[in-house]
Image (cartoon, rainbow, N blue to C red; front, side):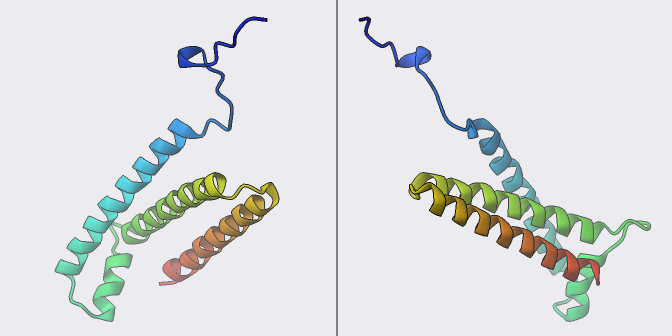
Length: 126
């Protein structure tokens, strides 16, 4: 019987192959959140610290395009996606029973979808 050559570039790699896609998604969502943080800080420096000033940061328009709401939505979607990848990886790495892991992943996904819906209701009613 021949010896197994299961190391180096000829090794057998199994699994979901999330690696590079999730790595890139984490970096892209982090950049989106960082840029939006800078936008928020500039908005807070320009607008007075009041309810009207805070509201103006999220409702400013360029022509008729609601730029403030679009940017906030993009940032929050990036936050939810970033959180999903991170928490999903934690569940996959540290929770070994498949049923428990699946339950935790479903609950996490439902919570993130619920927060996205709640966020959209609040932001787009302004």
